[in-house]
Image (cartoon, rainbow, N blue to C red; front, side, top):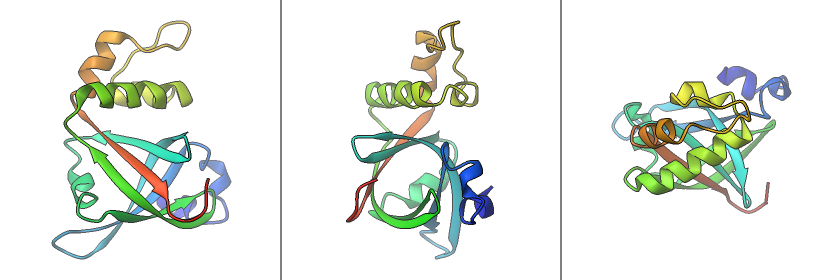
Length: 139
């Protein structure tokens, strides 16, 4: 999926996914990670399972390279891994933006595509929120 997001074919999936270039803390190797996102007040909000340890490389980075809709940009990074209430709110917003993310997070939706509150609370305990603020230009 990463090559699609970094190519001219990005329009196939870039409404839903962005590509993060993450530098390994120990290895220095560049990893390209596709993640689902939602736009919020000029920032991108992403989620990943806490057990997917790649997000720990973001904490010391402070700035990350993002491929968004065919453009490469730098973005400031803020990772939230402990405040479960905030993670739950951010997850609800991401699911509202893209209901297809709900099953991947383990959250059932009702007939109105609203998340099941109990599922959302449990899922928030297993996820991490990544907020990306583009450096320089807006979205």
